[in-house]
Length: 92
Image: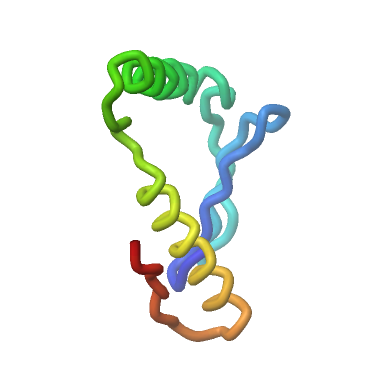
């Protein structure tokens, strides 16, 4: 959702991509969810297993996850307050 339009990607049951702009809504087909993201999930799982078995830090850390949550919270806050907000970062 942005100032110039909106993009919706369908779920497992809806293989459509809808683009909403000032001119209207355009529906475009996209590959089914698992078809689009299967390889990414396999690589993510393999990286996790490699990190655990190799006793090393995974490519995506807990701090990375925290930052994602902070950004998501800021997005919700901005939407609720109808204005731009600052992303509040938790010191680690």
